[in-house]
Image (cartoon, rainbow, N blue to C red; front, side, top):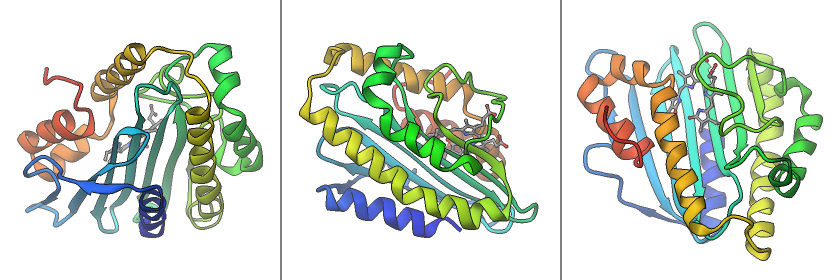
Length: 235
Ligand code: BLA
């Protein structure tokens, strides 16, 4: 379902000099003996970034996922790239979240980094519904201009493909601007905030139950703490 987006993401990463690097042992691929679903993950070394991870889950008609997070190098304080796309085929249900995930909720931070995303938020009202968050706090590591849609086939097949390319382009453009200007936050603070994102996300991520049901608790715990959010520690 999301493979064209996965390809586009990968093409962008490669065109910026990104190289695949090793995923911790046993976490790059897993197949469920129960459901036959499989999950693949990639790590990229990309100039200007500390870490860039990508995951694809294929559980057939029940669920397709594309998930990615990019952590800029600590010498730049711009937001993380956050992508979470879910398609529940049997129910024809889309959950799409695309955001520049902020390190701070200060107005000055938003003024510096959000012109690109604000424009997309206005341009794609179909993906910019005021959806309620059930597990996350919208005021922590999410921006007021995130593209967040709980929709159906129409949004999945029409709105999302139209928005995905400009969303990535806006993030690359933000990244280029950030590299060309000086960071307002010190590298130490940027790193601490990115690590706090991992701790927070590992606690709240609604995916853990889903992973456990497909791939068992031991593998899912390791995947969560060693791959998805490495600065988090097992409870
Ligand atoms: C919601 N994300 C969800 C849900 C699942 C996943 C199962 C609940 C679906 C629903 O609300 O109906 C799935 N999340 C995953 C998977 C992975 C994952 C499979 O991390 C890992 C491979 N989530 C992110 C990122 C963002 C994000 C980077 O991982 C930011 C763009 C957002 N996901 C996000 C939000 C929700 C969500 C905002 C709704 C959660 C809520 O209602 O609080």
